[in-house]
Structures are given as structure tokens and as C-alpha cells.
Image (cartoon, rainbow, N blue to C red; front, side):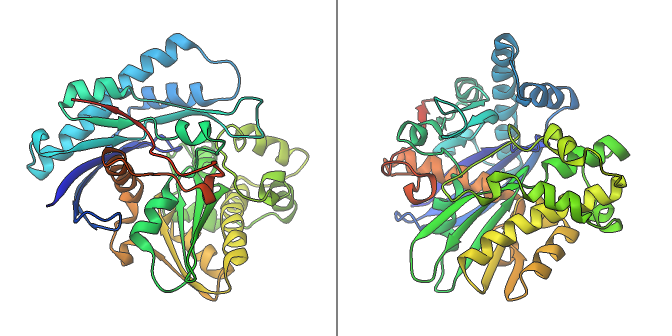
Length: 370
């Protein structure tokens, strides 16, 4: 019997809330997945700036965090009701919502004495406003078991995209992460480093645009060799997996330190940042296999310049958006959190210890009944 789930996601770019209505058929983890409807629900500039301020390294205000938690919960609920209305589906027909929430701090093992990951977007508010059981707080159980709590998508990628060929799935959001699906079996994944976050920051700073459409501005410049060397010299890139990262490490201050003493045009800095994203992803792919299929999802899949940089660095790989493999690249993560909610509701594990470094597989998240 078919089951309907909603997956919710707001990524590091903090540009919108992905709301994806997904139908699953069958009972196995690899059950058929069909995306019925999906939307990008806008986050206002005011709320976005408040989130970004809260995400910035340094002390944060608990009052502000508590209020944003409730405000975002209401926005997530509104996104859910809108995607259901678009699909002509009643809330009562949906088994559960899987809500990732909005990450405001991610401190993985090795970065602080007591690792933690904190997401806001109150699931109690989501359940109360929608009348739908909500599953949330997916990362902290994995961290309680010694894991990174990220990335969470490899288990979903393994269920949906595995084939008899070597495949890598790369999500390019604010940060980028890779899932390695070997033809011989097994799955491995980790964060590769910055994705779109610094590209968005830099073009906003200099051109007042929210993002670099098609990577046109980056394509107009040229990578600066010295700046590229400085950025890629960051110890994170040479760390072995498991590893995860976020704005705590790759932020404007990190870029400013690397630019110190260099005379580089803004367009060339943008081109260099794009090359850092492409190089860090390609290095991970090269370590995995000599050739295969690279499936790209997230906002970066719509960046023509970035996709071309990846293809140039990976000439023996077929580089294409996940659209070509049955799942719209814009909605993969949202669909993934719908899948994780389904795993939780069914009492099945959602993490992948080989990816996160957790001691064992575990059911993830907490269930907030309607």
C-alpha cells in the first residue's frame, strides 16, 4: 500500500524551505519513490538575516534562538500546508512529516570537547499547525553514538541511486557532501567542504545579488593561483573521513584571512571560490574510483559554470544532475528527510555508521504525534 510523507529542508544557504511530498510503494527500504509535488517556500530577508547572524561564530542569544525556533516551526508548517494544497492532498492522508529544521551550529567531533549539532524549527509547532505527526531532530542520536551527525543523505542515496556501476552522489548546497556507491557494495560519504555559501556571500557583497545565476560571474573571472593554494591548504581538505563541516569553519572570516595581502579582483575571487568547490569535490571523487557516474543535486546542480568545472576535472566521469536519474535535483534532500521520517516511523535505522563514524546503526529522530 502506498504511503505519503512530506520532507522538509532548509539548507546552509538559508534561501528557502524545500517541502517535498513523496509517495512510497512497497515495504522494503528501497521501495519505489515518487515525488508528487515540491515547492521552495520563501524565507523572508529579515528571518534569513536573523538566522545567519545566529549562525555566525561567537556567542548567541538564547532569547533570539528560542523565538526563531517557534517562528521557523510555523514557517515549516505553512510550507507543508502549501505543498499539500498544491497537490490536492488532505493532511489526514499524510503519514508523517520529516523535518530537518535549520542548523544554527554544528560542532562535530574534534572541533569541541563535547560535540553537538543544533537545529531549530520547533517540531511541536509543525505538528500542532498541520495536524500531522512530525519526525525531527535526526542528527543528535548519531552524535550520541560517537558519530558526526552528518552527512545524513548517504543512506537515502544508497536506497535510491545504487546500481551495478560505480556512482558518486554529490549534494552542493551551502556546503557540499559526497556519497560513494561502489559497484562492489558498501557506502561511504562525507562533507567535502564549501559549496555555494561563500559564492553567495561574495556576490551579495559586491553585486548585491543573492546568488551567481548559472555561475556567470565566476565564469567571467579566472582562479587566482595563490588564493586557490591558500584556500585548499586548509587542514579540513586533507582530513580523512568521517568528517563534516559548516559555516563555523568556512565563512567570510576564513576567506578574508586567505585574501590578506593579495590583490585579486572580485570576479577572480568568485572564480577561485568556484574552483575550490569543484576541486574539493573532484579530489574526493578521484579517491573513490577512476570513472563512473557523478550524480549532482542541490543548488549547485543548476550552476552551469560549476558543473563544467566538475566535468573538466573529472574527464572519465559522466557528470549530470540527478534529474537524469529519476529525482529532481532541487528536491533530493527534501525527499531524503521524508525517507528518514519513514525509517523512523517504521522502526528502522536511518544513519550509516561507515559514513558518520557512529558506533552502530540507529533509529534517528524523535516523533511528535499530531
